[in-house]
Image (cartoon, rainbow, N blue to C red; front, side):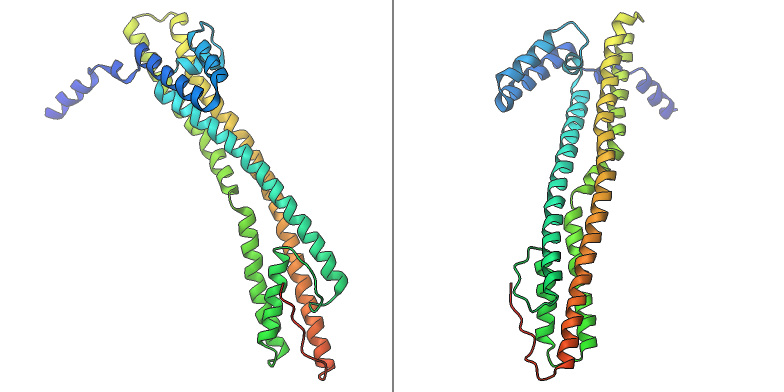
Length: 281
C-alpha cells in the first residue's frame, strides 16, 4: 500500500520542475555571452546576443533558446566535431612526414647495402638500425643465427611501438562516431520532454506554441550526426593510411634484416676481416 501511494505521489508530482524557466534560460544565456566575449571576442558575443533576442528559428537562435542540459549537449558535440577534424588533420600530417622519412632512409640504406655505412637516418629507421648494430656489437663472438633471431625480436618490438605511436588518438574518432548520435538523441529526448511539459503547463496543443521546443530538441540530434558522420569517415580513412604506414615499417625492418644477414655472411666468409664497425647514430 505504501508503495502504491508513493507511486501515485510521484505520478502527480510537479513535472514542470524539470523544465527550465524563461528566467533561467536568460540567466544562462547571459553567462554564455559573457564567456564568449572573454574567450572569443565581442563579435561572437554580439552574434549570440542577437540570436537570443531574435524571434526567428535559426539554428543559433534555437541554441540560445534551449535549456542548460540541451545547450551542454550541443556544445559538447560541437567540441567533439572540432576534435575529430583536428585529429584527422594532425594524423595525416604526422603520418605523411613519417612516411617521407621512412622512404628516404629506406633508399639510403638500400643503396649502401650494409649496416656498416655511416648513414644519417631519421626515426624510426634510426632506432631500427641502431638496435641491429647494438645487437651485433654485443654478440660479436656468438653464432650468426642467434644474432639474427635476437635482432628480429628487437626489430619486431620497435616496429610495433612505432605503429602504436602512429595510431595514438585514432580511437577517439571511433568513440566520437559511435557515441555522438546517442548523445544528440539524449538532448533531443530531454528537449521534447520539456516541450511536453510546456504543453501541459499552457494547456494548448497549438503547433506554433510547441514547434519551437521540438525544433530545438531535434537540433541536438542534427549536431550529433554532424559530429558522428565525419568522425566515422575519418576513422576509416586513417585506418587505411595507418595500414599503409605499417606496411612501410615492415619493409624497413625487412631491409635491415637483409642488410644484417649480408654483413654477417661477409664476416663468415672473411674471418680475418675486422669486426663490423658500429657507428652510433
